[in-house]
Amino acid sequence: MGFRKSKAFGPIVLLVAQYMTRIMGPFISIILVRYLGTEDYGLYASAIAVTAFLTFLPDFGLQQSALKISVDTNVKLNNLIKSTLYTSMLYTLITLIFLMSWLNIFQYEFTIKLIAYILGISFFRVAILKVMTTLLQIKRDYTRIAIWNLIISSIQWVITLICIFLEADLFTLVFWPQFTSLIITIIMLIIEGKKINLFSNINPFTEKEKYKALIQSSLEFGTANSMHMMYHRSDAMILSASRNPTEVGFYNVAFKVAELIYFFAGVLFNQVLYPVFFKWSKHDRDKYFRFYRLLNKMMILFGFFAAALVLLFSDELIYIIFGNEEVFASTLLSIMMIAVPFRFLVVSIGAILTTDNLVRKRIKIQSKIAIINVGLNALFVPIYGAIAAAILMVITDVLLMIGYLSATNKYITNIHFSRKMYYQIPILLILTVTAFYMSHFEFIYKVIVSIIIIIVFVVASLLSFEKKELREIKSLFKR
Image (cartoon, rainbow, N blue to C red; front, side, top):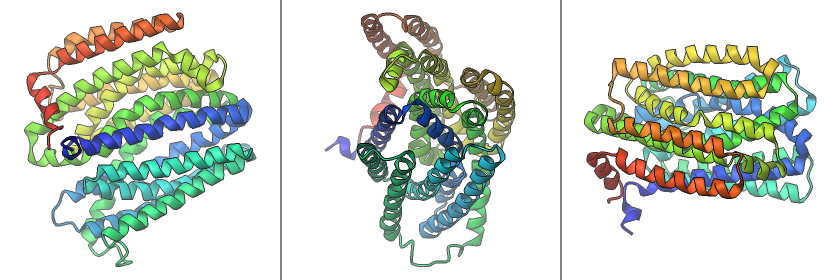
């Protein structure tokens, strides 16, 4: 009962629920690859590469904008959420126009086009879900966020499995999971909306100044998010437009496994920490910096740990998905894993730039990196394919980390973690290199190495944290 009433309970439930959805996602992908075969899955992967790239547009920074505005005690929650919802619907229509334009400009196969249009249903689901998640974030009701996410994702899994059991064709297999999950999301909108009288007044724009602030902030945050998608998703989009669908399928599978790791930092900051970071930035600067340094340390530790384990078992993971050895896919996955520690740190440092009113500085950095990334992808991916895309992913995260660190040093703080962390980094690097070297050994040797990695990781973590930081962690589990 004590833990259930602690500060950490809701966020932990949310993280567990989000990871359940992310674990089930690749599991369903394994079944899809086996059911569709390499060729049909390649067509599906080519379509999803385009729609996945555009998923940031239905929200376009509205979630972060609403969270920032909600800190103001004079804001009416009803009007804020209503304005956010209406604006999100407008952004969704713009997203559909972008989708149709891209597919027709690059003359995709008819099958890929049709699959992409069906997947476009997900834009409406994303728009509504983001707004309702924002509402629950403001209310700090993380448990309800977790429950709704699990329900919506579970519906998609169940319907997908039913379609496979009934031996449905590719289009049916794509349509029904998207449609049913949208219906459940609309039910979420009705249930959660009634609690704040969301439907009491059709006109959402009663506070025009607040609405202008919402749009202005959303454009800033949205531009930052668009840069993020530009350098983390444009590779797959360019790959789908220039290479054969089979290669796109291999890249998509490797990326989905890697994304399962990348996802941790994104959920931790975007859905749990951003609301409190905005608050601490204004009202408790000491706590703000204390948690910033603590989280940087945790991101480095978890980043190297996750990268080492996945590198070690990359061949086995790909074998489970395809049912046979696919050296090309496991090579892509190994390259992508090198980016994990850098990406975790990028998310952590990016959070302090976002919540400390330095979004425009962040956008400038992201814009420069995005131009470099898209340019290099457009130049090398059509020639060298997925290998080039995976390598450029790593290079992009390293450049982002350097850019964010420089901006943070200049405008906020030059202390990112305690000195103890510098002594742990060489150990973490040795662990990662060892995991890569051992990745082609017999399975039993990999198991032994993985146990050693876990032990060293635990010891390194305990040695890295200061007494004050350990007290902060313990305080989260108190009522």
